[in-house]
Length: 453
Image 1 (cartoon, rainbow, N blue to C red):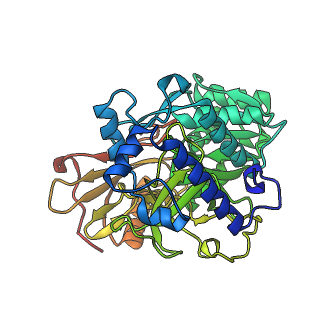
Image 2: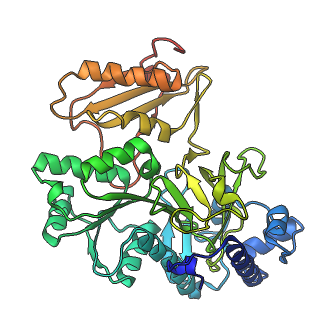
Image 3: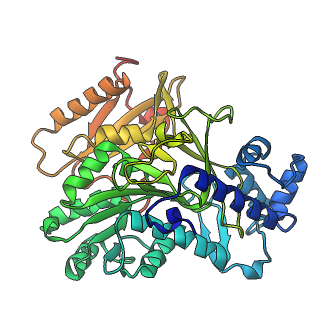
């Protein structure tokens, strides 16, 4: 295994990473044909042979894989579909996607594939400075979402004291952290903010916790500047460390230890591409595009050129063949600003492209806003937005706060939106992925004062 995979310096150079990627890619393809029915039929129908001369050859000849294809395959071949390389008896792990964007996908893993993903998650922890002797609190319930199980088992492998907090209330989780002196917290950005809110209400001083790392995932918020600032202020002394992954591909990125807000792709575990969502062609470094991934070690339930739907921007430096290493010493692909949004999340509101992550960054600039909700209406010719904010308890001037938020929407997006307030504690809180965006009939949405500023 290369130094990049183990986390031990010196890190692999770019040429070494790409050589390892090609070797693993060839091994993966050799396993798939003809054992994997899904890909054997897909590639034969496209007239593609399984041999590859280079990474460029693979990118040029092999078709993309989409979630819609996988959902259709599982619908026609329930319950697990045909994207299985081995007989069902070889599989020991079952997980599924959250279903927040369409039908959930069921995903199976062999012990070998699971071991490969554990190695990747351990690299996430190592990059965050988490290791033997640390006490890690997992503030979520252990359902079928894969990230929870991988993170827990990986921390155990590293020698951490793992504190499962599933089934506990938020207050009980905070007390568990205080009593056990937990110094690492794993959860979503939204839930970390909620925990801080509950701590303030219960009179628990988070400054008394020895927390050194707040490892967040599940939402883009960990790399959204205003959300990071709120998290850093709410959890004094803790470094916010972002990470992202998917049930279908496993853990993918981790935040650069030296440059907050920059995510490194776990290479050579993944072959990554960034393409134009509309044309499928590679975008130039520094331009936003859709992240396409080929997990190179998950042979039991493989994916070739999987269109993740995540919008990212490659740092120009890291995309150059002879580029100097990152400040952290790595030569792996670096994504500026983390996950910028989703291809299926963008809304066009009166001619303006609006991403939920950009709205999150805007609203979180206001420390007086505890929580918010966005209502979207497409009932008329033009999409309308309205925003409901929940002020912090004791907010001195709610009307002024609403006006300031509305003014910020005008300044940032050039849009006038209706902003209303509800009493503290009115809006829902989320343990997993937040669902703040609602679709409602036009009649339920107060009209904006004017179409544009």
